[in-house]
Image 1 (cartoon, helix red, strand yellow):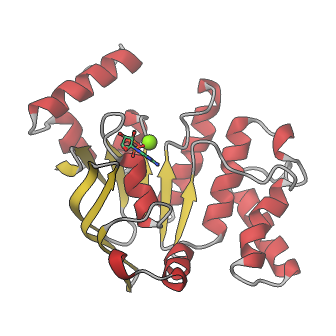
Image 2 (cartoon, protein in one colour):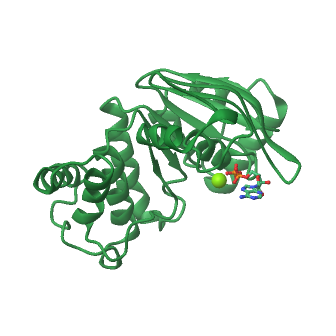
Length: 252
Ligand code: ADP
Ligand code: MG
């Protein structure tokens, strides 16, 4: 479904992704964890060429792309197979919730307007925003805006949904609804790569977790195994620090 081969990216001489190999299957929900600066966002952004990897290959749903040979039309094709949810929602401010979800359906998928509208409405209902379709982003809470962004992504039927800290910009009381929306998508079989610091959520929603360190995958396993029984001492220390700083009541 998604395969990364020897994916390599550096910034200013710093190797961020170091010949990284990864394979995920359809329906997998892969959690990417790791310290700040470990390359989690870069990994997601390389998968859809928001950052151009220097080397390596990406295969999504049978579409193969060698990073060194990628041309514009290949990148367009690759992007059609992914959708990305960002920390900062990235909605069009001058468009309503409904118009935001319709946009890609009309411009990228070439749906006729009325079909795009029906489909957009369907997905907004799915994320619990049936009563907010005509609202502009500034009249929506952060959690509602993020659910619009998720509806927009799901409506595009991506082969892989990429989520980069989708709840990190939200007030704590708004996080739950967004996590429920992601959980719903996971249970419906969407294939996802999720960067999240909501480790409790990740533990429940993901079926696999990887830990990034020095541009490589330092741990790979079920969330249960990676969190409860990490092989690497540094990862153990990271997780312990993480839990004690975020949720002191939780011990691993
Ligand atoms: P994470 O998401 O795990 O916190 P990032 O992928 O954002 O990490 O960043 C990994 C490293 O790459 C960091 O050292 C960061 O400063 C650097 N980096 C990320 N994006 C850029 C960029 N566009 N230009 C230069 N350096 C970058
Ligand atoms: Mg990041």
